[in-house]
Amino acid sequence: MEITFKEIPNEFTIDTLLHQNTYLVDGILKEWKGKTANVFSTISSTKEYQPTLLGTVPDLGENEALEALHAAEKAYNRGQGLWPTMKVADRIAAMEKFVLQMKTKREEVVKLLMWEIGKTLPDSQKEFDRTVEYIYDTIEDYKKMDRTSAKFEKNAGVYAHIRRGPLGVVLCLGPYNYPLNETFALLIPALIMGNTAIFKPAKHGVLLLSPLLEAFQNSFPAGVVNIIYGRGRTLATPIMETGKVDVLALIGNSKSANSIQANHPNKNRLRLVLGLEAKNPAIVLPDADLDLAISECIVGTTSFNGQRCTALKVVYVHEDIVAEFNKRFAAKVDALKFGNPWENGVQLTPLPEPEKPAYIQELIDDATKKGAKIINENGGKTTENYIFPAVLYPVSKNMRVFEEEQFGPVIPVLSFSDIQEPLNDMAESNYGQQVSVFGSDVKTLAPLIDTLVNLVCRVNLNSSCQRGPDMYPFTGRKDSAVATLSVYDALRSFSIRTFVASKDSAYNNKILQELLDTKSSNFINTDYIL
Image 1 (cartoon, rainbow, N blue to C red):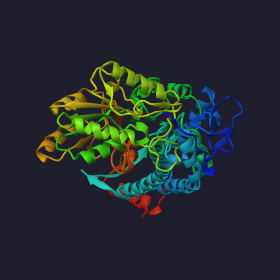
Image 2: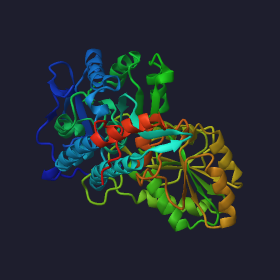
Image 3: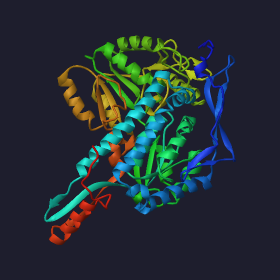
């Protein structure tokens, strides 16, 4: 696969290196003079290929990790801190202050998204804008929640004022593929509900947080959000071993989640909010609109090079139409344009993980040794930073590409004669996030849907799997998730129902009335924000 070097437009060149020499702890951007880690992009700036140095980040150790934990602990202060006891309106005001400052950094963050993880310019812009929208939607839903809670209930002679309260200290670990959007889908609801947080950015997509550090610093009280850099295991292990983390919020894979939570000495006290891996299938029925199915499967399998937990990672096609599907699908894959993220019309971009092309090649080699063929002409062709999507057929269950979440550009296709075949595979799978079903016969679809909703958490009818809209629940069964994310659900995942109760008596009622009249309690009040 030959790629001709193209000069990088001035607005996208790396003119100066970004040396992130501070980390945020206890409201202070602390200068770091110790060991640092280089941040490279797999995108080359020169005609002769070589990775591009983007800058450096601190390589913090155990002491700095525990320093961040202590700051978060102090800010929460066992529920007595300023942030968890603050009025809802004041926490919202802090979040609004943050997002206003965040919007001024759009250009910087978008540029770093392209260079750090190879995301196309339109998708990088979309990720930033979607994140801003997510924050505003979260604020609005929190207001709605507060309005709903601004009342007393009475049952069996007892008045209750029921609201949602924070859980405590959150350790937040985000993913590299959506280092802004998915990370903030954890961090923002955790913060706005009154929790305090230690946040470590992902290995890839780490520098793009740098333009936002000051906004975090001056928008939230000291210790509410602490941002540290370094190796996940080095930092997360000592933090978890203290037993002082109340919530582990992680988007990544189940092995990482299991190893991190294993360090916590009191697992019964640890709340988990996890977005994990998936092996989302597409099922193409014999009566499917092939043009539509192929178009959606192209998006589902190749968008951001398949580096999405919501990507379609295996495609089942009915034997009556598999030959036609393969012919047209393979041609569509080969027509996809590869290039750097800022180039017009590119759909495939450099892979951010240097080792990923070799891993994808391993999957291809294993499959072809066991009987699969690459059915698209460009499949498996490589450059220094990419391997072109390989469409493999026929794929069998003994192949690695069938079992493993490939998280990259390789597309396994299987044929089936009986719908029970893909259903049995899904039931036996360790994963259960989403499925895409393509077909039109209602008599076939109805019982299929009724089964699939018990195997996965989202059934996409004649459309590819996806995360959004962010108002809808995002979760999974088995190894694919713990808890539920979305604008609505995340606020509830990071909080707990708590209430004040009093027996209906003249004595108690007088006190409650005085509490309401004087507005001396931030919890007991019936005011709400419009």
